Length: 256
Ligand code: ADP
Ligand code: MG
Image 1 (cartoon, rainbow, N blue to C red):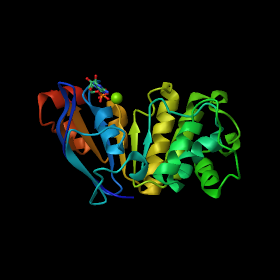
Image 2: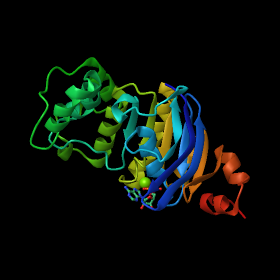
Image 3: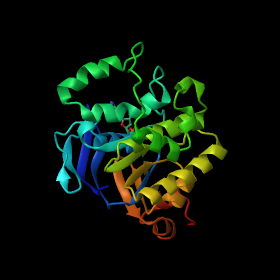
């Protein structure tokens, strides 16, 4: 696991500046939630950290090394999306195995594999490695390894997405509203499990949510983002009891 340093990131889509100089240091093993209203730039920030989108300016360091020019597959970060982004034609085991297969390949070898991952094709299901089994057991989905995503409940799909994030032993986890497609009961249960996962792995997490309660209960620190800027980043208690600005107070729901 490793710490992350985000240094003065900006991002422009055409004429619109979506990130206006975002800096954030996340310590090794820390759980930082990123909260803020819809459209404030949370997903864009996470996608840039993951290497799925390029910043306009600024730098990102993982374990004190700049990742400038490193493609997503080479940053050793695990991203979990709201949509889970599972391959419908692959089994649970094959879905969890995807990052392992990607990592073993060089950039040129990766290209044809990406083609084969498109619907209609499938990865040959070879022996399920111990890593996949361990991740699946940890998330209590080992009995589902042969199923396809379409045969799973929303909560089970969410676990597969987490299993795929876990199996690559990443430097850090990036989660983008991973619980927002779950019903209220499952959301609470999965929130507790993610917190346990964080504790037992001692892993670095950046966790995007628009749910203040989630952020308050799970995080070491909360970064409150608005209009492409982080307005405050502090412990849940400090953000709630001592908000820096009216905007933060209103978003977090602090007493005025
Ligand atoms: P959040 O995740 O906080 O809801 P996003 O990062 O998804 O916010 O979006 C921030 C802003 O950037 C929004 O105004 C959105 O419309 C814009 N945006 C995001 N991605 C693109 C894109 N690929 N092209 C143009 N605008 C985009
Ligand atoms: Mg978003």
